Length: 252
Image (cartoon, rainbow, N blue to C red; front, side, top):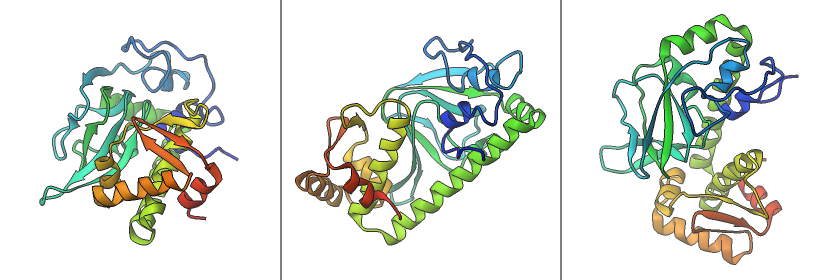
């Protein structure tokens, strides 16, 4: 049975679906030696990785604005970013948190313009891969095409969970679900150390993700800390009661 794919990093390491091969150094990015930049297509037996266009941007700056033409398939190489939709009244809804190695959206390979914007949470290094080359590589490699479909399905699965969170769950459960999701990702990346992991999201960004006000968000974070579940602040989360945190954040 194929392992579940939840992120592009999982896709890169899905040895059950893509023939394993040594990770080649990225030929276009001096900062990474393994991720989508060069490594993904190096695992498919193709002699040459796709060459991308790399850029850097400071924190809190927009990487992409909704409706603009895109330069290609966008991948986050380093740093954290968020996908969001800006509403006419100035409010925004954050759709997902993007970590290094993440594709901004599995469906972006099919679209020249995206319905959402992307903003850097920290300083970010990112890369655009040409549409035509990515599409051709997926079309010509059945194993890669299958994994791409599974990545698309995972994106839909996460969207369904978010819909349940926003429509039916309490403020505490919504925030716990976000923290658990990021904790799981960091644990997979080896960044969960001594019960602590990076969490550079501000209270405003947490509020925009969970559909709460910043004041309500602050109260919930204070409650989680006072109840000995977790402490969020200064760019990190310290987990004190992992089972209780998972209980609050889980739909099961």
